[in-house]
Image 1 (cartoon, rainbow, N blue to C red):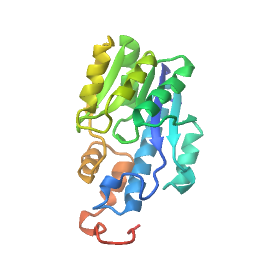
Image 2 (cartoon, one colour):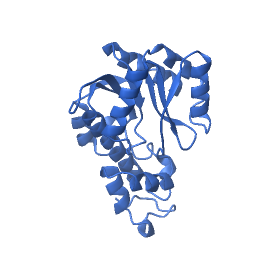
Image 3 (cartoon, rainbow, N blue to C red):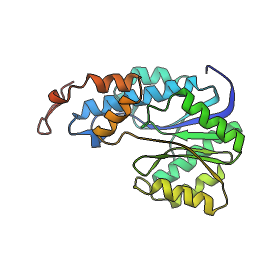
Image 4 (cartoon, helix red, strand yellow):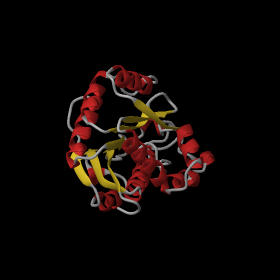
Length: 235
């Protein structure tokens, strides 16, 4: 880790960026392998931001076969600087709750993010962790599509409530915030960010950042993107 020591744990929930399984809503216009490479770039940008954030601990809750992932060697190298734990549970809410419990073993507040917001740089992540430490409550970063991109908890127990929230809907963020408040946990807002689900989201995020994800998006000439009827990737 580099930068100021922040007494918090940053938790990244991630899956192997495998062609045909990662970022499938980017196809079309992208080919499956192109979409997976963008997912890999987003993950690598996120891991770099976490390392530079100044957080005392960094954990990745991982699922999927890394050997089949795009940029597998680079991801494996980056993960050596993290505590890697397997994702556990049946539904996504249960896996998130278990990941928070695993990350909380360091005895510090936990800020959890995914791999869909590569524009969340080290300064953004460090600020989220510091807000959590100052308030001692809960911080939540809503996403522009109605979900959320970050959840910070001083105590991992509220994460169990995520099993009661429908995930991947346009009301997931609102329902998560309401659930936390209803159960007596004050919620402090982080900036609203766009997460990458569709290609238009990738263009928006690329315009807001300058990492490898943005570089790859800029290299994709929209006029030369693989047609939806193509049977083989362009890359």
